[in-house]
Length: 117
Image 1: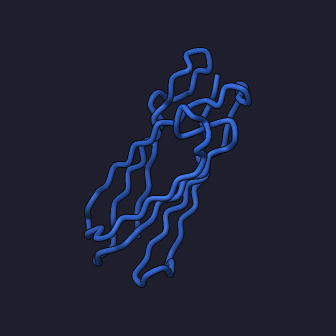
Image 2: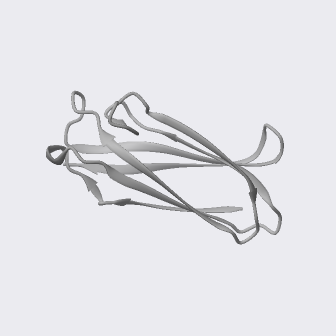
Image 3: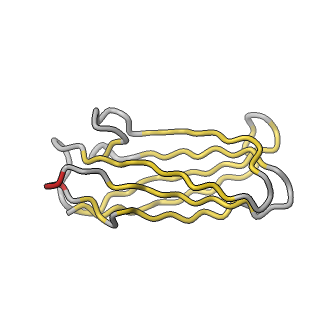
């Protein structure tokens, strides 16, 4: 089983600053066997992974995730200025575990909330 923890730094995205917030995801393999995992993140149209404002989804795959190993992943999230307004925005996080190629044995889905002011 993969433990998933996350936080935003700073805790909220301030539109007037036009600066990103960082999404930090901490993963830990609590299983006794080595895993292959994938991490998928989907942002709403009001947010983006880059200043170009076009990239709203991301998938990364990791092989050889050893037992008790920890991974810390960091992503910058930018406001998409024409669309964004103050409020709460939902970000979808999906972590999939594989023991066979291309067949997910287990999926964990989390809905993260980012506050925008």
